[in-house]
Image 1 (cartoon, rainbow, N blue to C red):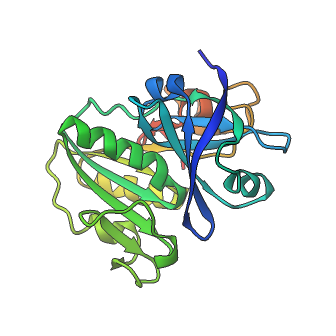
Image 2: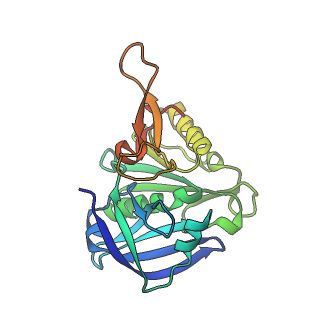
Length: 252
């Protein structure tokens, strides 16, 4: 059931010059959220802004989101003061099924680093095998990384020079490995094809522009392959039917 909460911002940290990381208090969201889900956060603008859940602490009843400044709404939320309250709707959408395998490769690009971080923490805590591959534009955008992650940058000033594919090409996964990816569509398409070429299952998260977040407004529809004969494709709602989909089902 979708529910809106009035939550307190407990901590705000700037991860990069244009990206804030908020720790928000809400025991219900922290207790129910699964990796790949998102929340819609109100600002002074007309529409709520969607953010992938980046981490949860069920014991302390908190969750985290990352906010990259791209407009006035995200600028306002990224500069919110600690102790302030915000209205949050969530958790929303369908997340990753992390029970389908004991071995995962997680791939993130851009703001995809945040929902993928939640998936990594969950898999790590469950004792499953997990490899993290992160792709950034350059060193100034690198965040939420660890020494054992495979990091790539387009500029080559940090980690491996190239896209996430350059990082994936250093791996030799077994046939039971599942790939989960969040990032720009061209990146997810490349990662999905990389997995397909190796016979691996791949799930992607469609971070479309959203408005309501609950499947009413139809702003965030994407195309998926149709099962009915004679129909080239169907439209589905990323917020309600996704945002996580099997790569083989989505038309990118």
